[in-house]
Picture 1 (cartoon, rainbow, N blue to C red):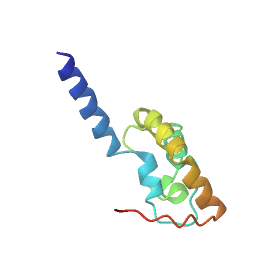
Picture 2: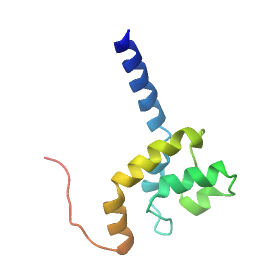
Picture 3: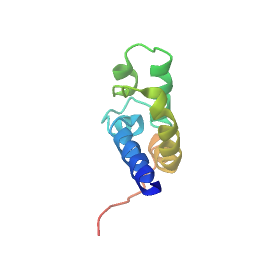
Picture 4: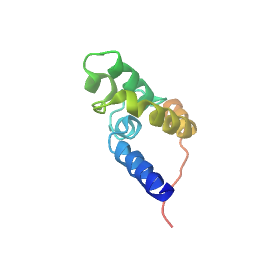
Length: 98
């Protein structure tokens, strides 16, 4: 029984990532949008009925921003060193892959 609950919780968490505001804002591909805690800011903006999130953040908020908020806070905190470096214009010269 506990495996079913764990699998259900994992599936629910993965389905919420599809609407993750952090990933949406970091993939916005615009230079004039904020990067530091951008997903958290977008969720907060949407929860409080902000106008025109696409203009302010370069992305639409998820359908349920209140549910997305804890995950966005977590991801924004994990990405904080990289987003701070990007905001400050520091080139990290990091490449991915094996």
